[in-house]
Image (cartoon, rainbow, N blue to C red; front, side, top):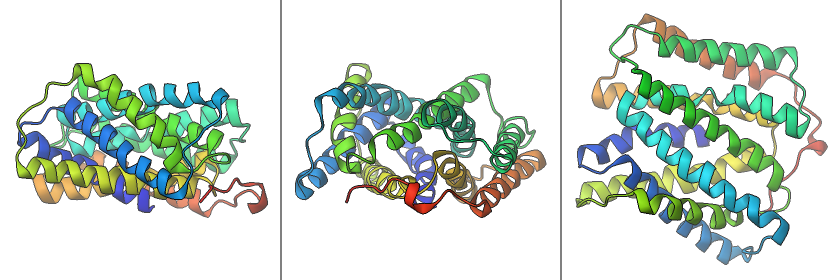
Length: 283
């Protein structure tokens, strides 16, 4: 829930940077590069900088897809559709997580989980099809759905590696690779003090802090359950977008947001697996 609150501020904060003339790809680049630097310092401080050679290829590959593609897609979703819409479309991720977790992790999709997933998807559909002041263009929906799919890979990635490596170790390798993949596509613009403050907040709070909090939670929860709990993020984004830019949802969008919140409550109240079966994140 703490991670969701941190992530929910991404859209509103990057809107500040957009207003200063910074492009979505440049924001994604700085987020990956500076986020990787923070995680690298953290990994060095705790003395956990090494990964096993057989795991290195998958961790670096995640840097291209899970960092470069995800960061870029989400920034474009905010740019084309607004902070509130982008954040809600991001949370098609629980459906992808449920499918991927069933295939690769063997997690069962119980009746309660299915009900929560259905509520989440209905909520996303309500926001996407509403007739309020948030008008979803096809391109905005496409970027949002792409960000949702690539975001879902974080859950699988975490479950595969959190039992072996600390969070800083994983992002020490994956984030710089993401920055390197983005670099040839970036056109660097002049940055004001406000631009750097927005970038700094996004890196420190919505990247470094959020991923530390989230992966600490993921190590103690099933992937599907964690993904639905994190669906609180669109609510944070919608509230901040309303107060800062007046982005208002229509009745269908409000109903969709309520369904997402209700799905979170359902998933939180479901009985979980025995605690001793859950992996613990390395400190």
